[in-house]
Image (cartoon, rainbow, N blue to C red):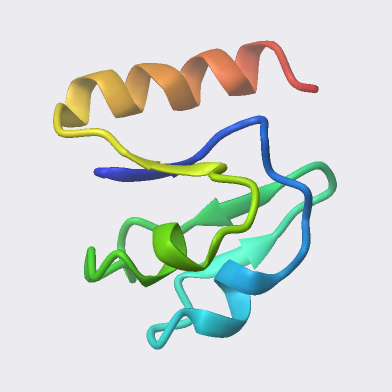
Length: 74
């Protein structure tokens, strides 16, 4: 789960449109990357105008960030 969307997401849709695998969907407050569909190509990170998508090398750290976001939304 190396690519994650941070709170800096502005829901512009650039990542969604650019994702070849349709791994990204827009939520209520930010986009979300489906790790089952993501092929880690990095297109979303490059397309993001607000630098809201980051690569996290440690899968455990990425999972912890996702848990924290779920526990404390918005």
